[in-house]
Amino acid sequence: MESLSDTKWDVVISGTGLQQSLLALALSRSGKNVLHVDPNDYYGGHEAALSLQEADEWAEKHQSAFGEGVFAAAQVNKEGEGLSFSRAYSLALAPQLIHARSELLSQLVLSKAFRQIEFLAVGSFYIYKPGSESMPPPSLSRIPSTREDVFANTAIPARAKRSLMKFLKFVLEYDSEPHTELWQPRASEPLVRFLESEFKLDLDLRSYVVTLTLSLDEKISVEAGLAAINRHLTSMGVFGAGFAAVYPKWGGLSEVAQVGCRAGAVGGAVYMLGIGISAVQNAGDEDELAVTLANGVAIRSKALVQGSSNPAGESRTVSRLTAVVNLNLSSMFESTVEGAPTPCVAVVAFPAGSITTSDGTSSGSPTYALVHSSDTGECPAGQCTVYLSTTSSPRSKDLLDAALSSLLTAASRAQEPPKHLYRLHYEQRGGTGSFTVDNKTGTFAFPPPGLAFDDSVLSSVREAWNMVMTRDSVDGDEEYMNFEDREGAADDDDVF
Image (tube, rainbow, N blue to C red; front, side, top):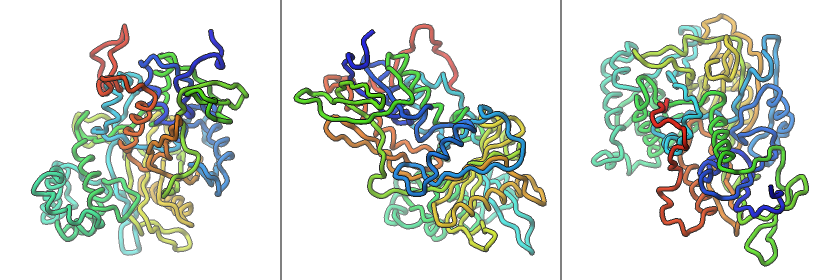
């Protein structure tokens, strides 16, 4: 077997984040010599899922508030007893839902990689409604997102139902004539203003609709908002009754990344965890790069693909809180449609202004909570994992803590909020996930920090694949992520 230095590498991939791992999947049948390295001791990069011990070590590494990477200001708090052993947990750093109409799912099916992933149903979307002295206690109101839901909802007045039905019908065909004539002149305006003026939706219904966008920006535009809601509605029922999105078991996108890496390894790629890259330079007059690994080994490669270490251009920072709670919150994971699978994820939206800290500070941006049952494999039975996100601000950490307490009080209907066992606070800088090429080196920008997977990052993976593959391939569109089954694989496996 040739040593690393003696091998003529076609590409070195640095980092096992989602985009690099999907690139490894795309190259797994190409016959290319691929060396895939990662300075971390675990797979997944920015989308990794960590055990408790790994999360503690990760937080210590990213505790600085002034780091230049994706993550910063990490802090762990443990309260009381009740945590299980470290490996009983798999905490996702960047949990994202995958809509049924996502191109990512199509690529996983075409590449046959879906057989190695167990997808779980994402269930109901809720709005948090705070209580007051003259109002009922805090509660969670389920959002109707289909015509059947609207008709069955007894809390929405008949006239408001007609307005909401009119909007749902409109958004299903928003990108065709004559609907485009209505919204395109106002494409950059805030969606809430459009909903009020064109469809006469009241405050509650506007909150319901905006929640379906999963946007942390209260002022999401008409164009972006309509596209997001259309994606949600058209995804409903694609893979089964009662749900529009799925979540990969055992840690979300981290599991997809590991599947991509396994495919790369089966295709002959060499993997090295705990080894990064210390230096890169042109290899003299040759059409190669001289790459020095962190262990001192020098290699030659025709190309290098890596992730960015600094935010490029404008970036958005999201404050996150991952909490493990000693409750199963089973009422949030009930099927609402006969024959639907039992959901393992529920979404809770806290509209701007609905959360207040102990000193009276109110939230200026929406906050979302992704509540995961133990069936996700991310925590033991009898517990739940809650992922909260909001736009970063000087008080966002306190606001996330307040949102967690409010959620647990409303969901458990307890007088005092139940105690959480583990909390991990951190900041995440987001980017576009775009791909740039400088000579023979390609770089992925920071990934988008949204709550739903953004298909735009897939075009960047395709660009990276084009960079590695020769331009002599005339059937690139047919070859990319479109594989025949390997010998012994079944043709009729179910996707979900």
